[in-house]
Length: 224
Image (cartoon, rainbow, N blue to C red; front, side, top):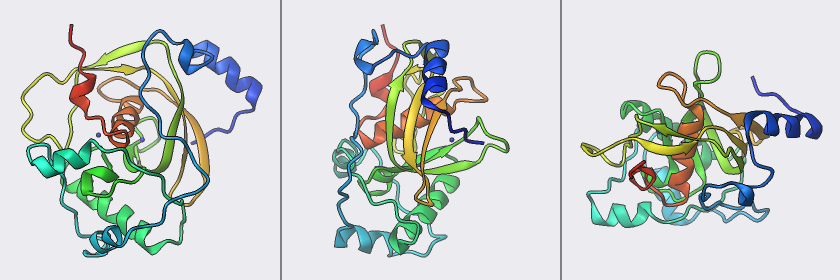
């Protein structure tokens, strides 16, 4: 298309029930998106990935894959794979910076690895819920719990689907409990909410997370 609090287990479970989370994904009444498991063994960069990432300077945007291109479209529906969260990895650092430049120049509020030709479980996401609304780089995300409550979000859009003229209202979970690594290699867990036009952090995270599953936002359209 985004201050973190560490909670003990008891308080966290109380929050789940307070904001309407189910005790388990399988107990929700809504079908859940597929999930990328967080694994301990990460696949190293391929030479093709390294060549693509390092082919430009840190401030040079990357080409955004678009659905009107058949080869791009086939790439975008693949599932991304996990990567080692290493704060000192020069390839990851270059990719992070180039993805950020690509997103900013495209006027986006988020961008995922597959959108720039790198099928890895990473994305940028705007944190509307934090002071000054910073962008955050997310590595190996997993949505651990989804709220039972669903909302219709009428402002979805995607850099990989330019000039889209169809309906944009998608059906999303109002709250999610997520786990991911930061660009510094630190694991974080957060409850994300925000589904309004001025604060849609939860929606933005779900949108980018979908990209890692090979899912584009038209598949989430709220159609009768």
